[in-house]
Image 1 (spheres, rainbow, N blue to C red):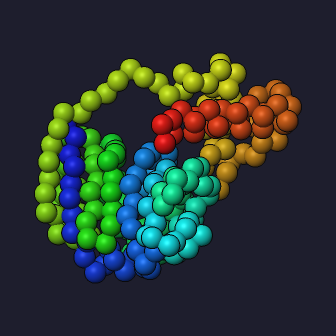
Image 2: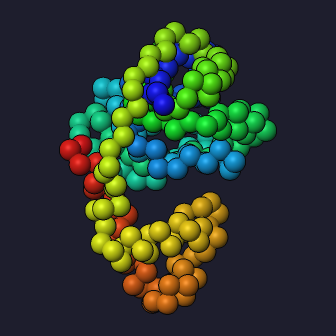
Length: 217
């Protein structure tokens, strides 16, 4: 497997999808992909938003159906945010499903009005297909390859055994899907514990994961 970093000059279609985002934003840098559901058109990511001088996160003009769920950290012009995008509309839904390839979408990710850099890990044929598809979004200027590096680190190791058990049960039962398949009451009944205990463990687990992923930012 190889890691590919693809650099694209965005075309008119891509700029139209951005809307007025870069009126107040200088550039975006991706930090973590938490969910990427091509079938439902849902994307949940942690992103650094770098604002232009004189603007704050309150001035961001996000595209339709994109929302900041939480501001995790702010440092002068940089805001680390939890961002959710819900793709709707026949054209955009079909476009997103085209990118459902046998690839791992990865970091780094960067975007400003003049360039997009995105990364993926996979074999040669899926990467070639991705490069071809990206031509829909703009002109591919450069594709560079590196070895795909993996470590034995498991982010779930920051959780207690109970937190891990409840978090994994929540995922398995559809608590984190959209719309949710179970609520906290139904999840607690499946686990055989109280709703208050379930909520407490989930919140603590989510906070530990966020702190671990954003350590140093």
